[in-house]
Length: 544
Image (tube, rainbow, N blue to C red; front, side, top):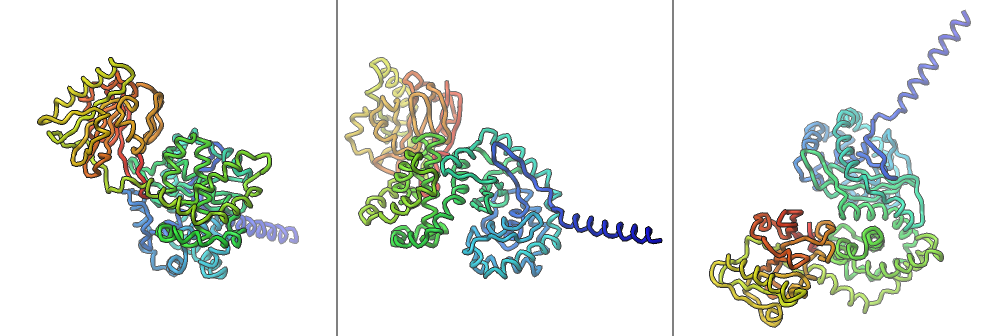
């Protein structure tokens, strides 16, 4: 009898323990993969954050037509009035900045329990620790009541498809070692969260010694959010992970940085419009951006770092990036003296404290240099006035007389397509003329046409003998290309360039009709290699 009683008690206790163990098991089958030292994931906590944000009319949800977005809105629409959802809305509207939500949700564990460690500033934004703890419970309750666990798990095939695409595209992205070498610090993990519902949802979060970079999705192909390893992606990875290295050092030395808070005044309006509304935030943004440019220089070289990274930062009015970059070069050249970023940080503080009013006056004009030309759009080749108002600019400086004649003859032949009789001038003549009120057709290599040689620096790409850099770097020495930009003497009129790396490849442009469809068209033997357009990001023109 006693044996049966003990047996029954054992079975009952085992059942309770099993139930408890099962209750603690994660309810999510998280979509994730590891690749070259990074974890890539579609994190259920961030998806839950985006669901709650979408229910409350977030302007940051991707504008792309996406079936998954429609399914989110349809499934969760009836749950927007739940007390738990309303608690989230009240907290969101009550003081959270753009980054507070991702920080809060990544401080929940895989069962949506608050794990502690949330930054004091975000705790205060949230209304205090009691509200943080209460909100965590309500977020978990919302997930239970709305069926979020099931919704996420049912979409695993979709998430895994996004990850499979990322795995293919990011097979050569291997940046963990570069980050740790640059900062001289190691961390337990680096997780790239593919933030598929937010078009501009890019954030850096640190939880203990686990770093997160949330990367929003701006491109959808075949109803699948798509990520490409372009310069923009590398910039986001460097930027968002750098926050985890830089921000703690800035806030730990907040009093020292506040001694130069007057530096915020010249850039305050612009930075506030970008969501950076206090001086310490401005400091860590400057430091992160300066570090990002230096990391890009280490990866791609100085030329690309300046074209694709530095120009954007200065144009966005982060003017103190320049003196910080100079100081970081000193850090990189003296790593035997400074074992890590933290050891060098007193020098960073001195640099910021030492910026004078005279330096600020020298830095401010660079903002407007980076933003030129100040126009809404660059015309397309089809907008050129192919009539008697056109001026054709011929080269005089090709590598020899024979090459110069070949290019000039071709230019004259091409000018024959013009309706009416255009004005023909040499590059030397054009440099001394007022060319306003005319469209220009400029023909020749960058070295051979002196007018083009002078003005090519205004166009946001790079042309060298053995490579071109437009949206990406193209290796080769046999490219021919067209460029559409503004007339240097009149931004209301355009300049169309027919060129190549070698004069013998300035030929047969008339055989391609694709060249008229893009601001820049790059080809080999008039076979299109790539075409793209110039557009403005943060008021800075670039090739995309």
